[in-house]
Picture 1 (cartoon, rainbow over the protein chains, first blue to last red):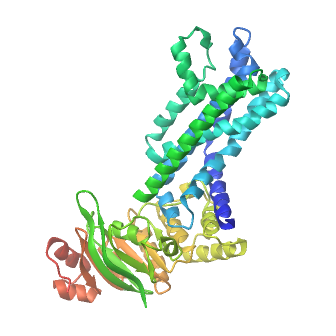
Picture 2 (picture 1 turned 60 degrees about the horizontal axis):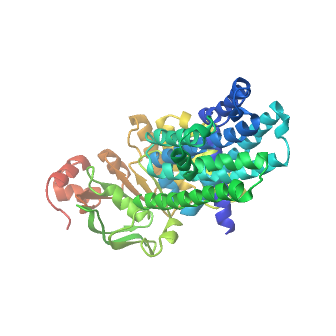
Picture 3 (picture 1 turned 30 degrees about the horizontal axis):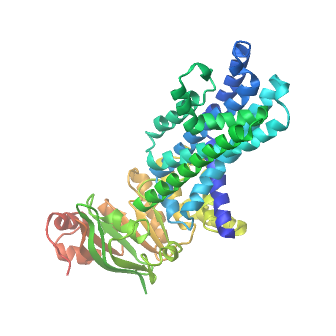
Length: 250
Length: 244
């Protein structure tokens, strides 16, 4: 058990360094969402409630997490392509340790994203500071696990050339299906129902609701949380199976 | 003492046998070269022996441990360097060594000792603060092989270690591999006949998944009537089974 934890810690440390030393990861995971948060607030917040900071900041937090899928997937697919993972498969590390090593490396990144975008949002609009923000930060770790799981799954099945395209579907999916960039009340009921079936809108709603106060816990908290958790569990199981299958292929 | 005992080992895929029932014994401290054209089954054999791929038939024993029933015990005895460079790209040489040492359960003191040993053996001290991706192909390959030694394996698999390197880097690596001889059992696969000739104690030639010849250079020359490994290899690969 102690050896296993030590190996997970070692794998996590290496994965954090690999991701953070890629300048593109900092640009896409931190700088781009930060730029969007500031720009969109000042341009649009007087035009539509969508861009008031109490909705925009949680939306940006979840949007930025979509890039976790990209960089997790990219790291795994590159490790596979370069035979780095093959080498590690001969070491004492076990499949679950690899997966935990990848996942644990991205959780601190998600935490930094969440704290940073909430703090900047709070500096711009201090009304969002409060206990809701702390709850938002904590729950954003839960929503980040969904995107990390997607990244592990994509990295296990996609080659290094395909991973960018595959992960961009998740980023686009988050943008369109979260409903954060446009008011959804003009959309058809069918489309809104479809949006509610996917985890993207539920993840965004969850963080927005806990930041702004929950009046109907079943509808505003438990339903979106359980949908996100169900998707996260399903994708994690698929990711573990695919990763193990790739190990066997080696 | 026997380091590796292979008995009727095979790997079947849907439409072909990648390894077609090979049997072989390799002694401790021996450097054994496995030759063969592309698709002959060399890499599949190495992958099975290092527990990366499960055989579909037969078995192999690494220092008495079965690759089928005791793969985790075998993992503690072996390490490998693949034909592709396998290093952490954004980590420095020092961080790569430290990472691999920690992953293999070495403590801080042992990691420090292993770093010194690796820097000395592979002359990596001068580039220890450079990120792996900034190193030349030759240095990356050196690092890749150095990482395989950190776990102090009893059996080391080198799958085409000099593939794609220029002639100077290749000769440098030969020196490094020669220095390892005797300290551990080494299985080397290669396409370079002069490499096998210069480094090996014994040579095995594979063709279509089968082991066509096993013996010393001299036995290879005698069996084929040729005077160098390349001509002898062509004779076997283009011709019939010479295995006695």
